[in-house]
Structure formats: C-alpha cells, structure tokens
Length: 368
Image (cartoon, rainbow, N blue to C red; front, top):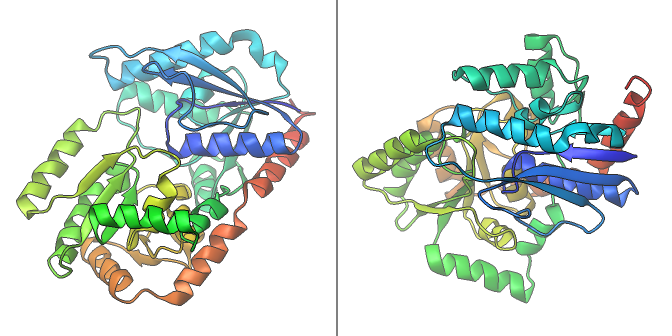
C-alpha cells in the first residue's frame, strides 16, 4: 500500500517518535511509506537517522520572531496543507498523527495519542476539527478510546505503541560500552531520578519538583534530572514559576533539554528511578522505555496509566504520594516489578503495531 504518515515536527516528541517507528515497521512489511513533516527552525531532517526504505518530505517552516502559539499553529496547518496539496490522491492511506497534520489534509485517518483541553480559540477549534472530521480513528490505549467514545461518540481502533525495548535493555546490560556509558552519566550526576518530557503543565513538573524536594532532604546527594522538552507551545510562564519554586525549595534540578538519540538509552538505564507524574497521557512511551531498561517506575495514578502499567509500576495520586513512592523505589526496588516491567515492554513491538495498522488500512480501503 502507498501510505502517507503526517506529523508536525522533526524533533523528539512522543508523537514524532511514534510516527518514525511506525513508518519503519510498515516499510519492513513491504509497504510504500512516506513521512511528511514540518522542518521547524531550519531543520532539514529528523532528530535521528531514518531507515532508507522510508521516504521523507520535510517542508520548510522558518521561525517568526514574536509569533504567538495560535498564529504559529494556524501557519503550521497552512504551510503543510499547501505542500501536501493535491498529493493525497497518490496514497491509499493518509494517516495524520496529530491535530496540526489532521487539519492540514482534506480526508484522513487520525491517531489520537491523548485528548487536550485548550482555552485558546484557535487551538480549541483545531483540536475539535482534528477529532470530528477524520473518517477513522486509532487510539494508543483503551482509556483514550473511552474518552473519544464518551465525548464524541467515536468508536476508535486501539493499537498500543510499540517500544524499542531491545535498545533500552541493551543499554542496561553488561556489555563494555553499555557499562561505560552508564558510568559516564553517573559520574556526571551521581544518583539521580530521571524524567523525560521537559517542564510543562501536562507533565506535572511542579508536582515532581515538590516531591523531589521532600525526598532530597532524606536521600543525600540525590539529583533530579529532566530531559526532553521540545514543544510547539509556549510554557515560559510555567517554566518561570517552576524555577521560582525550585529556588524557594532550595533545590537545583539538572535540566538537559533534548538528549541526542544515541545517548538517551544510557541516560535512562543509569537512573535510580524514573518519574512520570503526567496529569494527561495517552500511553507513556518514555515510561515504557524506562521499564525496558529495568528502571523502577513511579507514575501518576491515572486510569490510562493504570491500564498501561498496572503490575509494573508504583502509582501515586498527589505530591506526598509521589514522594513516598520515589522513596520506596530508591530504597527498596521491587524485583518483581522490575521483571514485570521488562516483560511488559518486550511485548509491545513495533512490528505488531505495524501489522495491526496494516490490517486496519486494508479494512478501510473499500470505504475510502
């Protein structure tokens, strides 16, 4: 089949990681796959090498100084729509992976990774169209599918994310290079709690900061390391509040920003615990990668995360609970959870995800 997968960025966010891995797995099944994306800020390619079997179209999207979030989103849609234009007829399937790409095409299948709540009028309207107008929907978890059914009366097909479990398991292994890479991160930070996703409201960053301050007072030398953070939205106000609160608490977390693709598995595998206090998620790919590396996982007690990680993680509903769960993960890591987590991650393969997508595409072809 001729398949177009559309995403909004070349940079490492969960939806972009999903798009690339799905594209490569579909190409591995013999499909003709092209990934369309916007090259923000002069980007000419993705954050990591992409398998040669996958075609890439990176549409230039230069930055504009002073441009607000709403205007940037509308321009993103317009630029991708103009580039994709009449090319839709070249494909058997046009599969949008986010709100921007779903608004940029006339007719598509849409993956809903999670459901946002926007107050900015432009964003709210784009979000609504990106859910209501696609002719079919995929969700990465049962919980998100239930939200679609309850809020919009939409029946979605549930296809969980795959995980590069072997890559993260290898980083936690006994190989000489893996041991050296972990040792390098620990030499830099000592013993640390890691989170991946940046500093933003949806990631529960303020709650994690408060919980870390409670734990750090009882665990000398423990650091909080925050990786990732590439986003389309402007969270400078939230980041400023976070920095002010860190100063008030007397803690100094280590904020790395995006970590090179090849270095991320060792950073994860070297962590003493992985914190995932998000208040809104669809699956939790970064947390699943931590489980693949055998790292204890502490996550927010949300229905979707219970659905995905039940039996493999520690759950907490509030700041004191997060702090207590982190202490437990640090002081008494449960080998049963570690074993269950690695087994869970290993079951989520991109090959299985690709086969499920291909079956869905073929079932929809006659109606399209």
